Image (cartoon, rainbow, N blue to C red; front, side, top):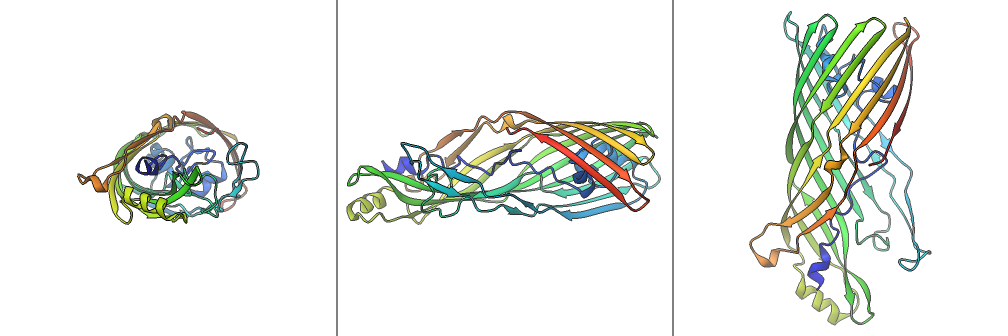
Length: 358
């Protein structure tokens, strides 16, 4: 039955790279040290890396920036028996600009500080060239995820060398997914590409929190601990089906009769974005050189399934609900950063990160 086939695998593909779909690139100084910044957190990007660092600001500071994220095109090569070892495909080149804004403000002459962050902690897009011939078009031809995280934060300098920060998170997000639907053509006894499926969600929101600690033991040693909670977003949106003629009139008529083409089919789904824990240790090698080592744990196991449920009471605007098992795993990554202050206005920074795929 074509109706049952159209929705199968609709959400089987979301943007995915070596580090999942997380964006850790927040602040140029931290990026120069490959994100090894939990035990320093001495610029406004502390609102992302470790809220405990906000406690040590003595005056208002702010930061605004964007990051250009690109990658080479991923390639696909088929195998026998299907789609065959001659099948080829190539992804479009990734080109994204996740941005951030951070501001920190001391509250009078007290030990309390306030900060506000706006960033993009998750996202990115995968899209395949030549979607009409891409062998995997039954799973996905395009998958796009956007997030915007608002993060008001309070921090308290409990002592001259120990700070605590905690904040709330309001994450806004939407998703867009395209794929093709197949049905068995009785005239050729082969699968036929019968419909284009487009899913677009509203901009929905979820809530979470974060906390961080920074201990500057002395001028040569500091350590930090940071945690950002999971955020679950329940999306509402619509799916739209567009018929793809096969050239067999009787078969096309049967498909058209069995599927609700040209209508907006209301649906809902959800994504539970992972939590992130970071532990960092920073050591001064001399007055001008600093080395930091960080360990991060990302709880990707929260991304275990993706379900899609049609919500209309009208049976003519419903398709078969489905659940896609993702079964991602929690992973650790390891970061090493080096900062060499050449002068009061110049620094050289180097970093290395080893990030396991979930």
